[in-house]
Image 1 (cartoon, helix red, strand yellow):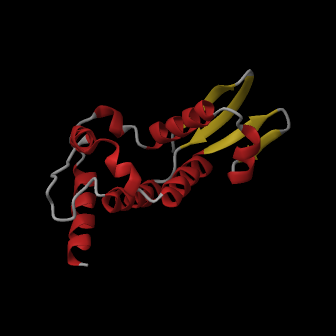
Image 2 (tube, helix red, strand yellow):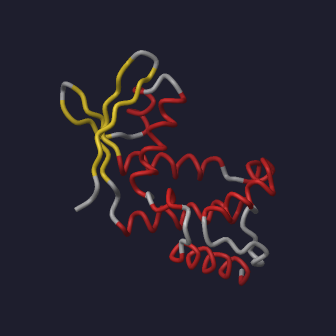
Image 3 (tube, rainbow, N blue to C red):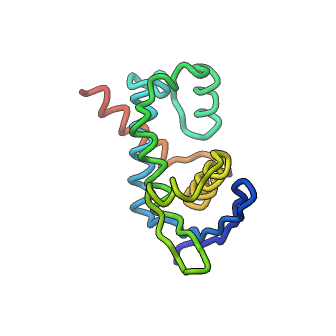
Length: 155
């Protein structure tokens, strides 16, 4: 059974209620693969294997090393779509009228504060990828990164 969680987010002075349901394992894997593709294209992970990142501290070191420089190389449209997919696949809005599925339009009509939207995105990420909180070795993710960097090198 997938993990679920009800949350309340304060947006300005409005309490917004959501039910979060973790994506399937396969959907999580696809989402992470897309994220890794975006990060590799940004230059944060080197296709030549210069960085050996196997855990969150390695990612943090790579970000610290490059500073904000890599942000200019991230495809903003791909990153935005990735976040939108995460929220839409994970969260539904709970109202007095019932459950409302989230899509781009519903999100635009719901949130007035960027901080509130960030909180929903953070909660969705945390529910689906709680192993990132541990900070330990992520051998499956490391394998995926190595496969992606190998494909990029061979292109």
